[in-house]
Length: 211
Image 1 (tube, rainbow, N blue to C red):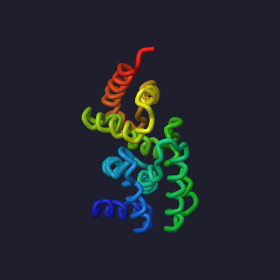
Image 2 (cartoon, rainbow, N blue to C red):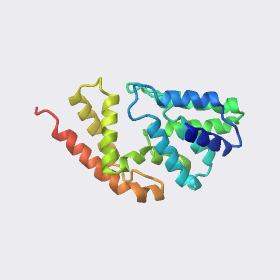
Image 3 (cartoon, rainbow, N blue to C red):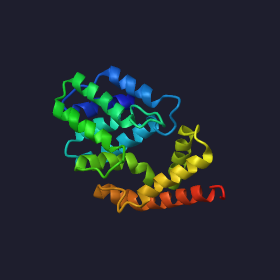
């Protein structure tokens, strides 16, 4: 908790603003909701820790940091508007802190980029998306844990359907010319991510029922 509070203060200071303790408490409670297994405080901490190491690559590090804080503020597995609702949280917090509308709009766009529907359009969006996807390039043990955590979040989905849809999603990442757009993160994660994805897809397909 002390570490999150320190990071919260530090990241708002990047914008020359002070974040409210009430918003911090709301965020920490959201990431700790009992229905979450991957989109948790663990994921938030991993994103913030990685950002600390690459913040110098951002054009607007304060905005990128706040986008990471809020990118999974709202998370319901079946919902299609998690990113939009999370971006609304960020906008409310930023406006309360006195941020300009240009800042709010850019942070909104950064959070929406984590929906992964299209390739990010600028340096900061690439960085935020790459950090969000860093789990794909984690070591084999952490990636296996991640896969188990995602399955737990979708426990209500029948296992055969889950495996089919999961394999399709992972294959779309594998089909990209590059998973990571930021050169430093590409160099660090790309090869491991592709190995992890191939292994996960093969495992899902192997366990599919015969037709």
